[in-house]
Image (cartoon, rainbow, N blue to C red; front, side, top):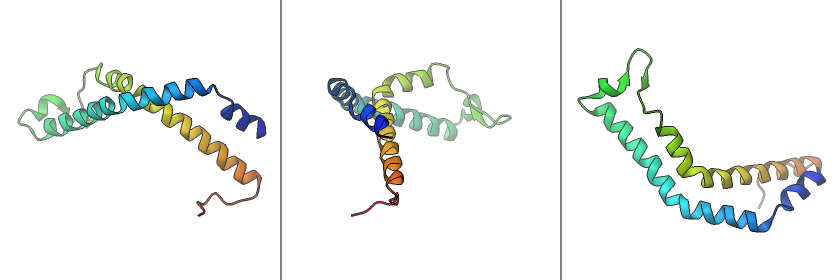
Length: 107
Protein backbone atom coordinates (compact mmCIF):
# COMPACT_ATOMS: atom_id res chain seq x y z
CA UNK A 1 0.00 0.00 0.00
CA UNK A 2 2.73 2.44 0.97
CA UNK A 3 4.53 1.77 -2.29
CA UNK A 4 1.36 2.62 -4.23
CA UNK A 5 0.90 5.93 -2.42
CA UNK A 6 4.57 6.76 -2.81
CA UNK A 7 4.30 6.04 -6.52
CA UNK A 8 1.27 8.33 -6.90
CA UNK A 9 2.74 11.08 -4.71
CA UNK A 10 6.16 10.77 -6.30
CA UNK A 11 5.02 11.64 -9.81
CA UNK A 12 6.80 14.49 -11.47
CA UNK A 13 5.24 17.68 -10.10
CA UNK A 14 6.02 19.52 -13.33
CA UNK A 15 4.14 16.90 -15.34
CA UNK A 16 1.15 17.12 -12.99
CA UNK A 17 1.08 20.92 -13.24
CA UNK A 18 1.37 20.66 -17.01
CA UNK A 19 -1.58 18.23 -17.11
CA UNK A 20 -3.70 20.49 -14.92
CA UNK A 21 -2.76 23.56 -16.96
CA UNK A 22 -3.61 21.76 -20.17
CA UNK A 23 -6.94 20.60 -18.74
CA UNK A 24 -7.79 24.12 -17.60
CA UNK A 25 -7.04 25.57 -21.02
CA UNK A 26 -9.04 22.85 -22.78
CA UNK A 27 -12.02 22.71 -20.41
CA UNK A 28 -14.00 25.40 -22.22
CA UNK A 29 -13.42 23.84 -25.63
CA UNK A 30 -14.25 20.37 -24.28
CA UNK A 31 -17.46 21.60 -22.68
CA UNK A 32 -18.45 23.44 -25.86
CA UNK A 33 -17.77 20.32 -27.97
CA UNK A 34 -19.86 18.04 -25.72
CA UNK A 35 -22.72 20.55 -25.45
CA UNK A 36 -22.69 21.03 -29.23
CA UNK A 37 -22.90 17.29 -29.70
CA UNK A 38 -25.81 17.02 -27.25
CA UNK A 39 -27.62 19.96 -28.83
CA UNK A 40 -27.18 18.61 -32.36
CA UNK A 41 -28.37 15.18 -31.28
CA UNK A 42 -31.52 16.54 -29.67
CA UNK A 43 -32.28 18.71 -32.69
CA UNK A 44 -31.88 15.73 -35.00
CA UNK A 45 -34.42 13.81 -32.97
CA UNK A 46 -36.98 16.62 -33.11
CA UNK A 47 -36.37 17.79 -36.66
CA UNK A 48 -38.40 16.77 -39.69
CA UNK A 49 -35.35 14.88 -40.94
CA UNK A 50 -34.99 12.69 -37.88
CA UNK A 51 -35.31 9.52 -39.93
CA UNK A 52 -32.19 10.54 -41.87
CA UNK A 53 -30.15 10.57 -38.67
CA UNK A 54 -31.88 7.97 -36.49
CA UNK A 55 -32.11 4.28 -37.28
CA UNK A 56 -35.28 2.99 -35.64
CA UNK A 57 -34.38 -0.63 -36.44
CA UNK A 58 -31.29 -0.49 -34.24
CA UNK A 59 -32.57 2.36 -32.03
CA UNK A 60 -29.36 4.32 -32.54
CA UNK A 61 -28.17 7.55 -34.09
CA UNK A 62 -26.22 7.54 -37.31
CA UNK A 63 -23.06 9.49 -36.56
CA UNK A 64 -19.95 10.26 -38.52
CA UNK A 65 -17.07 8.03 -37.52
CA UNK A 66 -15.03 11.16 -36.80
CA UNK A 67 -17.45 12.48 -34.14
CA UNK A 68 -16.28 10.43 -31.15
CA UNK A 69 -12.54 10.78 -31.83
CA UNK A 70 -13.02 14.55 -32.17
CA UNK A 71 -14.65 14.73 -28.73
CA UNK A 72 -11.97 12.53 -27.17
CA UNK A 73 -9.20 14.63 -28.74
CA UNK A 74 -10.74 17.86 -27.47
CA UNK A 75 -11.35 16.47 -23.97
CA UNK A 76 -8.28 14.22 -23.48
CA UNK A 77 -6.47 16.62 -21.08
CA UNK A 78 -9.61 16.96 -18.95
CA UNK A 79 -10.11 13.18 -18.91
CA UNK A 80 -6.43 12.68 -17.93
CA UNK A 81 -6.79 14.88 -14.85
CA UNK A 82 -10.06 13.18 -13.90
CA UNK A 83 -8.43 9.76 -14.25
CA UNK A 84 -5.47 10.78 -12.08
CA UNK A 85 -7.85 12.21 -9.46
CA UNK A 86 -9.85 8.98 -9.44
CA UNK A 87 -6.67 6.92 -9.08
CA UNK A 88 -5.51 9.04 -6.15
CA UNK A 89 -8.95 8.78 -4.51
CA UNK A 90 -8.88 4.98 -4.82
CA UNK A 91 -5.46 4.92 -3.16
CA UNK A 92 -6.91 6.95 -0.28
CA UNK A 93 -9.87 4.55 0.03
CA UNK A 94 -7.46 1.60 0.21
CA UNK A 95 -5.36 3.40 2.82
CA UNK A 96 -8.43 4.13 4.96
CA UNK A 97 -9.52 0.49 4.64
CA UNK A 98 -6.08 -0.73 5.70
CA UNK A 99 -6.29 1.55 8.74
CA UNK A 100 -9.73 0.13 9.55
CA UNK A 101 -11.62 3.34 8.92
CA UNK A 102 -14.92 3.78 7.13
CA UNK A 103 -14.92 5.12 3.57
CA UNK A 104 -17.70 7.55 4.45
CA UNK A 105 -16.81 11.20 4.29
CA UNK A 106 -16.10 12.74 7.66
CA UNK A 107 -16.03 16.33 8.77
